[in-house]
Image 1 (cartoon, rainbow, N blue to C red):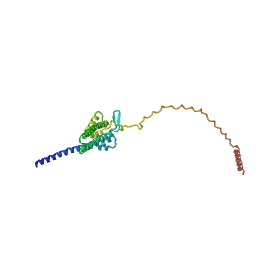
Image 2: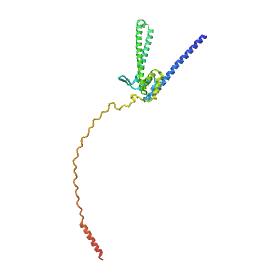
Image 3: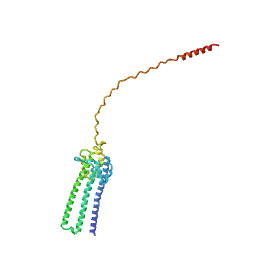
Length: 265
């Protein structure tokens, strides 16, 4: 009885430790998810980029990081949408691995259930599946490496907009390999002024073609001289006024006769 109790007690202790371990991992993952989302939201607001809420979506957060960083320089070329590649590379890589893994499981189940797969044919099929799995693992490793390099370049572009010197490189390494560091450093960068803005924050001219220079100044042709001034013809003189002497003399004569008539009684 005591032996059974000891086994039960050990099982309970194991389950408690197991639950605490995975519970702490779950809490750490949840904290990382929240802090990462807040960091992407704050840095998006700092750079004037919309859709900062994508930082809380597992696939969308990497697309938003690429949108905040802007174009990336790859030698003589420029990657215009790094966020799209940050979102597609993990989906393609892990999606291919998952499909091959499911195919292998189905193959082994059918091989075990069918007697026709025994013998040399089954050995050859297993060898082919092993080669396919090896190729998929190599492609998955290459995709993971490419994804990590692209993510580090994205972080470096974001931090270079706020800091100078070796700090962007140091923050890039911490953000790429330390889970909680990326969200915390992004929130810190969002409170720091932008000193090296990305290309989408720089004013661009309205027209892509340069302004055409004006044609050289051509002076006006000399003024043609006016014709010489011709004075107007002299004004015609009016006729001199001659008073009507006849009317005046008759009025004076009539007035004198009236005066004589008034003097006689």
